[in-house]
Length: 484
Figure (cartoon, helix red, strand yellow):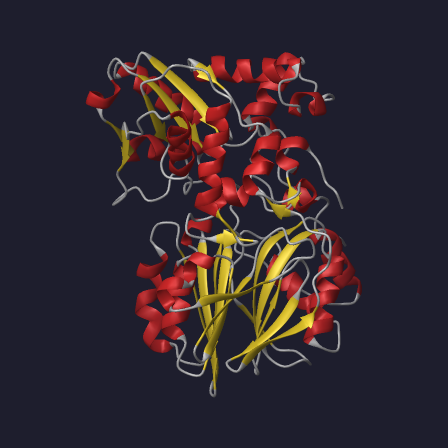
């Protein structure tokens, strides 16, 4: 009997973020590097964190729920229980990781980042072979367990990883902690990054380069799409060459990525300055100040302010000691309340002013609508908004960013539905910058958010700001494109 009838049942009613991992092999004990390296990925997820190490006595593992506490506070008490020269860690927004597997290949630990769209199909094929799976606490299948099972179908880790990558529809990057070292494998089309760091006597694999500097690592290699490497404390060996086709998520530079990180040798903060500059070049409004919706809108706002030669201010300040995550609760109304409570307005910088805000994106727009009203309540004469990317129209099929409870929750799709009487057969026309339908959609969003003006980034300007050819970027959530 099939496990479930449809993919949407597996991924029903949840909001997702990207997730990230860190692995290290060292001639010395690696626990300190593993702990802090994994912690530097906390901006990528809010549900679970996990660590695993391997030493002469075997594998040690710890997994915690981090919805109500930071990674450090949950895992610091566990550190005395860990030791070893190699380990892997993960920040996950779905299944509990790392998993430890026993197999004909030997025991191994595994962490994954990505999204498996054909998880039901893969599970049913395994059931036909009389393979069984455990379930998550919610009764769902564990994507990481599915990947591990696919790996164990082959006669080597390299062959197993390739088997998994070929079978998965979606994306899946992974780290494997084995008896001899760590495998790092980037997803087939490179939608998520893996970067290798090196220091004396140690190598590390990370989703984020910001994990390297304070731990003494320097960037050694950016893995290409589908590339597989094997790390020991003595070296880093390529086990599979990268493919030529790449579709790295462009939203990494807009929102996901930490400002100090780089992907494909392109720094996040640098791109955000260029995004803000591009927004400024397209604008002709007279304003008093530029501000950023903290935190990811800050870099875009600085770029805008520098381009237009207008002051950058902070009319909102974020109170973080007790309000760390606005997207943590499952209930949307509670998320909106958290977002409102943690941003404190400063009347002296707002009253009587024409303020332009830069934001990374507008997903649903509910929080932004509240913030705009607060600004007007505090006496702002005009409130302008400039998202650093185009309107989100299509749900993400690869990393779960905009996989909201309903596609129609997206501000763009809601506006289109209103304009098209519930139909969505001409989405491509709405995705075109400056088309009449695009202008109508943006105006409908502006009216709902009660903004003085609203202008989105043009896709061609975003691509130019990143600096990679469009065919190497995944821009699906904005224009529905998929090259491969």
